[in-house]
Length: 297
Image (cartoon, rainbow, N blue to C red; front, side, top):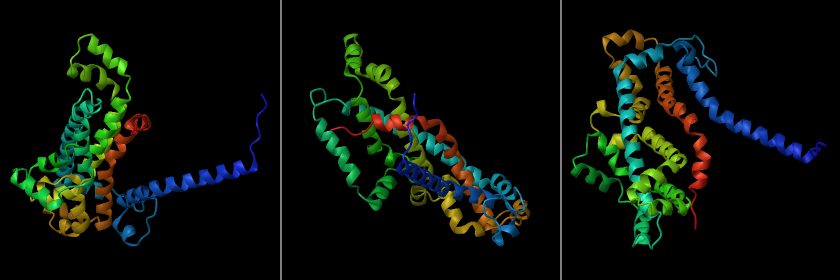
């Protein structure tokens, strides 16, 4: 079979396209490489601005300080618990809401009213002060639930799931109903196994949302020991120098080997690492999950 020749204009387009993609990838990757290099470099080299994308005067003092001092590890544990509980609650409520809303008006009376209610919450909210008052009066302040329950049902992700369910063959559900399956059996045995791509997609959205949320910790938590990692990182960026001065005698010698930039870089890199580790395992579900869950007319 004769191979078709690529035109000159096509070659120019591909060259420009690949160059642009490489530049975009480098703009995303190089900041992390620079951050990682700073975290592994010695204090004098960082202070002198000698570090670019390779460690200078290699040392692990910043990571040793992060792991030995209890604040970082405690905040990491708080974030893991918050992310796990929050994501599980998000997924459960999204599935239980999306499944009935995926039915047409003949099977769910008032479906359009319910749907309008949920869409309204996407466009309008009471604001920060009313939300704070509700959380405080409900007795959730200074608890992990103050960061989870106010956003327990992400409506946008729920709509993705709803449209995914609407795209499933109706014959599968009808066959299960003929066999005597109840709605809960239908959801558990027929719909949920087919929801894996879409659940993985919205699940990762929820994981990243909980992991990166620092503002709710600032608002609802007074005890620094309860801070999730993102909130701890935010306070770290503001006052890392004062936190180092408050270090106990066991950590002063270690703290003297690092400076503000190396200490921040190590802990920021460690904070981003869990999401970077989880993402490759769920990436394969992204395209199918978002395509199958796209909004339909």
